Image (cartoon, rainbow, N blue to C red; front, side, top):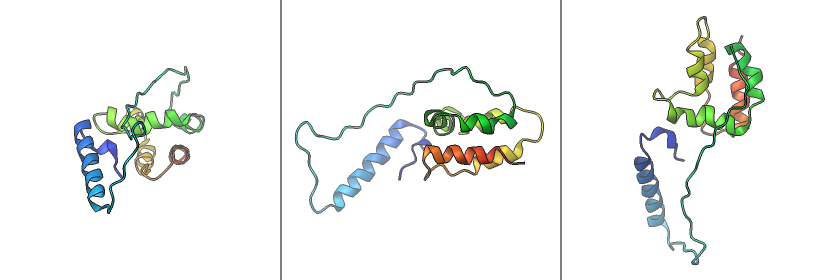
Length: 134
């Protein structure tokens, strides 16, 4: 498995991906092939972000808001945010840090979620649990 968010540049991610493919092909007894027109191509991903108009004003309102978020929103605010944020943080932790008070339990619980082997729906459930900590 490759975690694309640990690489500082797309070029480094590209090189690691090519190295893994090359290593796998060197282990193969027969190199797979594809008919012309059926080749595999890496595609480009584009993120489209739009304002839903929904707002959360306090960290203790997050659980209900997150439970209503789409998978796309979870992806954007958790996985993609780690690449956008210079500190490598998800949007929720970064947002909560700006509040006075004892919200450290939320931040800690969010950061302890291992997003590597979960679906986006499972991550949503984990997040709701993390920000429901009393």
